[in-house]
Length: 123
Image (cartoon, rainbow, N blue to C red):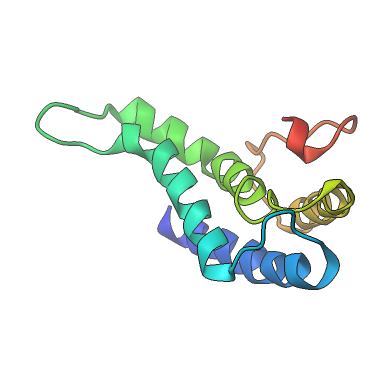
């Protein structure tokens, strides 16, 4: 799973931050470290249910499901952290950018693609 997260980070984040800075206008200015931190906070909220402690015992089936959904979790987190501070025109640009990156990313067969209608922000 960590290799998958490293791959997703390397494939999406740097280019996404560069696209944000060069192609879009933010309604609320950010710094790269802030939006990347936001990405990991959103990912952390998804993964919190999969942390074992003395009270919470995670079942093997839950871990398999989480591994199946990690790409979806990452792309959702990417959209709502790095891509979320832009204006409406920027969202249209980022919609095309994210869909292109998803098609290039060689994600697993279990990745649930975004529907053609609407934008990636609608799902």
